[in-house]
Image (cartoon, rainbow, N blue to C red; front, side, top):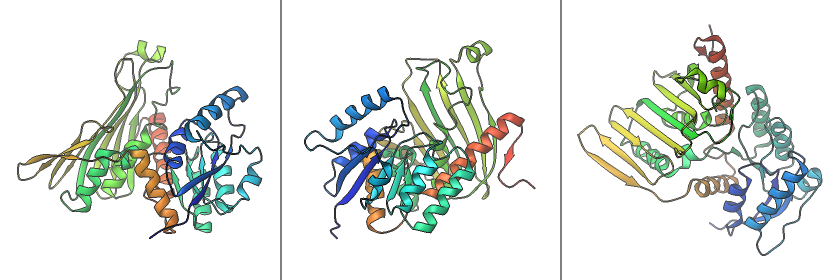
Length: 341
């Protein structure tokens, strides 16, 4: 089936906008018609990022830069790509949804589950497509292959897993002691949520875990260890943060165990996943689509088919609640429950 070309607007110049823009700009079924830089960054940083974005996505045809967000949203846009700060996100997202546009936005979607619930209400009231930026642990090559194993029932009833996302520490005190829970944590939680397919029951988290006090004081180590329990009895461990080993590459790893065997993703940005069956066999599965392109393809299909995408507002709300439970557990030193008695 052939669909009409979608009109797309860009709002804000946050870190992932170039990735969105690049994947959108190279599609034949999309036209980027306007950019609203906003005032979410300093004037100097806005100018620098705008020039970089325009060079990347508009080498031939100039894309209008629009100062008035309201006027931009009056142009019957089909989709907007939003990359503003988390505090501004709910207002901008809701305004875009109510204008009739679908939305993809940068994470974190909101600073609380209450604000995420406001966006959820707007999505349900408007019926518009909504997604947000955490494609790697769902559309990343190995995670996509994992999804195929589950879909074809070669792997059933996942019961336990371990997810790690550790980056080198390229900045001083990178996350202010939050151990990158809001930044890297969503990838781990989504990896579990999309394969275990059960609601979270409880979280037991430790921030600034494992390492020496001198490292903590200097901000060179900042890792969190998070234990997850799900309502269906499955469990998992997430380790996220930054290491003082500056030369260490940024790596995502995921191991998942089920009654049929196990899956080992040794490089979440790579092209293979190893599957160990309960019959003693093992094999590598190779896939090719890049995470951002696969993610954008899913969102575009969702808009054309008038449905919600694979990574949706309900994932966003669950992630916001997950992050809240992690902070609550770190503060109390006790497990934090989704529905306390």
